[in-house]
Length: 150
Image (cartoon, rainbow, N blue to C red; front, side, top):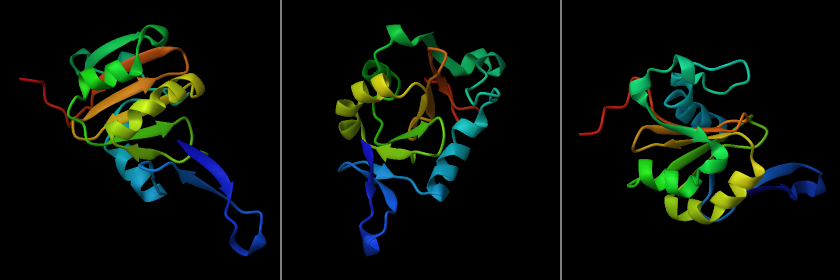
Protein backbone atom coordinates (compact mmCIF):
# COMPACT_ATOMS: atom_id res chain seq x y z
CA UNK A 1 0.00 0.00 0.00
CA UNK A 2 2.77 2.45 0.96
CA UNK A 3 6.50 2.03 0.93
CA UNK A 4 9.50 4.01 1.99
CA UNK A 5 11.90 4.95 -0.84
CA UNK A 6 14.92 7.15 -1.33
CA UNK A 7 13.79 10.49 -2.67
CA UNK A 8 16.61 10.63 -5.21
CA UNK A 9 16.84 14.40 -5.03
CA UNK A 10 20.42 15.71 -4.99
CA UNK A 11 21.91 12.28 -4.39
CA UNK A 12 21.10 12.52 -0.69
CA UNK A 13 19.90 9.74 1.50
CA UNK A 14 16.50 11.32 2.14
CA UNK A 15 13.60 8.93 2.43
CA UNK A 16 9.98 9.54 1.51
CA UNK A 17 6.73 7.60 1.50
CA UNK A 18 4.99 6.70 -1.76
CA UNK A 19 1.62 5.07 -2.23
CA UNK A 20 0.37 2.58 -4.76
CA UNK A 21 -1.87 3.94 -7.50
CA UNK A 22 -5.19 4.94 -5.95
CA UNK A 23 -3.70 5.34 -2.47
CA UNK A 24 -3.58 8.99 -1.38
CA UNK A 25 -1.06 9.74 1.34
CA UNK A 26 -2.46 12.33 3.73
CA UNK A 27 -0.34 15.27 4.75
CA UNK A 28 -0.46 16.34 8.40
CA UNK A 29 -3.25 18.88 7.84
CA UNK A 30 -5.44 16.32 6.06
CA UNK A 31 -4.69 13.69 8.69
CA UNK A 32 -5.60 16.12 11.47
CA UNK A 33 -8.85 17.16 9.78
CA UNK A 34 -10.00 13.55 9.29
CA UNK A 35 -8.85 12.53 12.76
CA UNK A 36 -10.76 15.44 14.35
CA UNK A 37 -13.90 14.39 12.49
CA UNK A 38 -13.65 10.78 13.58
CA UNK A 39 -11.16 9.27 16.01
CA UNK A 40 -10.80 12.32 18.26
CA UNK A 41 -14.54 12.31 18.94
CA UNK A 42 -14.07 9.16 21.03
CA UNK A 43 -12.63 8.80 24.52
CA UNK A 44 -9.19 7.20 24.30
CA UNK A 45 -7.17 5.01 26.63
CA UNK A 46 -3.52 5.59 27.48
CA UNK A 47 -2.55 3.16 24.71
CA UNK A 48 -4.42 5.23 22.12
CA UNK A 49 -7.22 2.73 21.55
CA UNK A 50 -10.81 3.86 21.91
CA UNK A 51 -12.17 3.38 25.44
CA UNK A 52 -15.28 1.54 24.29
CA UNK A 53 -16.62 1.19 27.82
CA UNK A 54 -17.07 5.00 27.81
CA UNK A 55 -18.91 5.09 24.46
CA UNK A 56 -22.73 5.01 24.58
CA UNK A 57 -24.04 1.56 23.67
CA UNK A 58 -26.38 2.94 21.02
CA UNK A 59 -23.37 4.09 18.96
CA UNK A 60 -21.61 0.72 18.95
CA UNK A 61 -22.79 -1.35 16.01
CA UNK A 62 -20.60 -4.43 16.43
CA UNK A 63 -17.74 -5.77 18.52
CA UNK A 64 -16.00 -9.14 18.36
CA UNK A 65 -12.68 -10.90 18.62
CA UNK A 66 -10.57 -9.82 15.62
CA UNK A 67 -9.82 -13.43 14.72
CA UNK A 68 -13.52 -14.02 13.99
CA UNK A 69 -13.98 -10.95 11.74
CA UNK A 70 -13.44 -10.69 8.00
CA UNK A 71 -12.44 -7.05 7.50
CA UNK A 72 -13.79 -6.82 3.96
CA UNK A 73 -17.16 -8.24 5.02
CA UNK A 74 -17.33 -5.76 7.91
CA UNK A 75 -16.53 -2.79 5.69
CA UNK A 76 -19.08 -3.90 3.09
CA UNK A 77 -21.75 -4.43 5.75
CA UNK A 78 -21.42 -1.13 7.63
CA UNK A 79 -20.29 1.15 4.82
CA UNK A 80 -21.77 -0.34 1.64
CA UNK A 81 -21.98 2.92 -0.32
CA UNK A 82 -18.69 4.33 0.87
CA UNK A 83 -16.64 6.22 -1.69
CA UNK A 84 -13.62 6.94 0.51
CA UNK A 85 -11.99 5.24 3.47
CA UNK A 86 -9.28 6.80 5.61
CA UNK A 87 -6.85 4.47 7.38
CA UNK A 88 -5.09 5.67 10.53
CA UNK A 89 -2.20 3.66 11.96
CA UNK A 90 -0.95 3.41 15.54
CA UNK A 91 1.38 6.38 15.05
CA UNK A 92 2.37 8.94 12.44
CA UNK A 93 5.61 7.20 11.49
CA UNK A 94 3.60 5.82 8.57
CA UNK A 95 1.27 8.35 6.92
CA UNK A 96 -2.49 7.94 7.08
CA UNK A 97 -4.02 7.09 3.72
CA UNK A 98 -7.27 7.63 1.85
CA UNK A 99 -8.57 5.01 -0.60
CA UNK A 100 -11.74 4.01 -2.40
CA UNK A 101 -13.35 0.65 -1.66
CA UNK A 102 -12.17 -0.68 -5.02
CA UNK A 103 -8.53 0.07 -4.19
CA UNK A 104 -8.96 -1.13 -0.60
CA UNK A 105 -10.34 -4.65 -1.19
CA UNK A 106 -7.17 -6.30 -2.53
CA UNK A 107 -5.05 -4.65 0.19
CA UNK A 108 -7.16 -5.73 3.19
CA UNK A 109 -5.59 -9.17 3.76
CA UNK A 110 -2.14 -7.57 3.89
CA UNK A 111 -3.33 -4.85 6.26
CA UNK A 112 -5.02 -7.36 8.58
CA UNK A 113 -1.97 -9.64 8.62
CA UNK A 114 0.72 -7.01 9.08
CA UNK A 115 -0.79 -4.14 11.07
CA UNK A 116 -1.77 -4.97 14.65
CA UNK A 117 -3.72 -1.77 15.32
CA UNK A 118 -5.52 0.59 12.96
CA UNK A 119 -8.70 2.59 12.46
CA UNK A 120 -10.79 3.02 9.34
CA UNK A 121 -12.96 6.09 8.94
CA UNK A 122 -15.82 5.62 6.48
CA UNK A 123 -16.22 9.30 5.63
CA UNK A 124 -19.62 9.29 3.93
CA UNK A 125 -21.22 7.04 6.54
CA UNK A 126 -19.58 8.55 9.65
CA UNK A 127 -18.53 5.11 10.83
CA UNK A 128 -15.31 4.21 12.61
CA UNK A 129 -13.80 0.72 12.56
CA UNK A 130 -11.12 -0.14 15.10
CA UNK A 131 -8.77 -3.11 14.97
CA UNK A 132 -7.18 -2.88 18.40
CA UNK A 133 -3.86 -4.25 19.54
CA UNK A 134 -5.69 -6.32 22.19
CA UNK A 135 -7.44 -8.33 19.46
CA UNK A 136 -10.86 -6.66 19.45
CA UNK A 137 -12.60 -5.39 16.33
CA UNK A 138 -15.26 -2.72 16.90
CA UNK A 139 -17.57 -0.76 14.60
CA UNK A 140 -19.25 2.42 15.79
CA UNK A 141 -21.12 5.47 14.60
CA UNK A 142 -19.15 8.61 15.37
CA UNK A 143 -20.39 10.56 18.41
CA UNK A 144 -22.01 13.88 17.61
CA UNK A 145 -22.17 13.20 13.88
CA UNK A 146 -24.05 10.02 13.25
CA UNK A 147 -27.76 9.52 13.13
CA UNK A 148 -29.43 6.16 13.69
CA UNK A 149 -30.40 4.31 10.52
CA UNK A 150 -34.04 4.54 9.38
